Image (cartoon, rainbow, N blue to C red; front, side):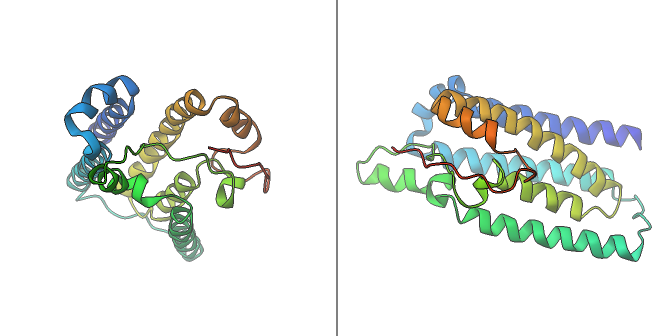
Length: 206
């Protein structure tokens, strides 16, 4: 069992390192000339394939593990957390430009002769008034709401570590990109749990 945890943890670590490395500016500056407007889409496709590979490794490692014995109240509670996570994910995604997020807008604008950027403007409204990373919050609820056995538990643990570390690297980039605007936002709005309630901030003007 411990060896399985180590192998699965190593798979998550490799995913996190590669995913973060490809998001670094010095790597993007070298790869973007090769992919051009298709860079963002290629980045997302590669990340999806990589996390799918990690998931398959986990399924293989834990295929013979027995599910946890859970009390009825825990089953119901986890089910509610899981559904809330997906609801939050769907609603939070509506606050993003999904075309830019996926990379399709960059490709469309490329064929129109327009130079599009990968970075979205800062969001200071909607769920972002409550937490800085609503998509990550939704992901955490989904991860922990679906824990039924060792595989799900380790996925939740490693996934939580990845989101926490990934958020820190992402925020370093956002501070370099937006400076005091994001630093102020970070100081006032919590990362994942809305412990401060709703915080009103002005939108950053382009």
